Image 1 (cartoon, one colour):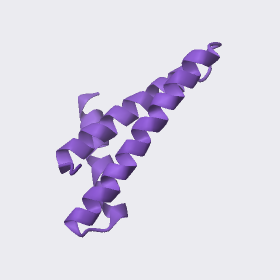
Image 2 (cartoon, one colour):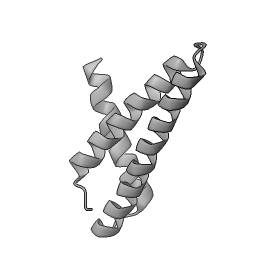
Image 3 (cartoon, one colour):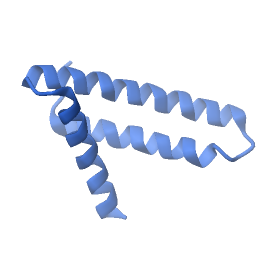
Length: 82
């Protein structure tokens, strides 16, 4: 399924939020919650990576540059909102 750049940015934001949850649970004494959060983050991150690869091929761009652009945009707006 083809994704727009904006969809990739939203997917990255969702994965970043899931990663923040993993980091928050890392030092708590709740292994099942940590494991569930880690699995969710891992799945979201894999989905982002696959979508970025597909988008780069469709746009005839280097995959690494697309990934960098997506992460920069996703994290730029997060920083601006803080």
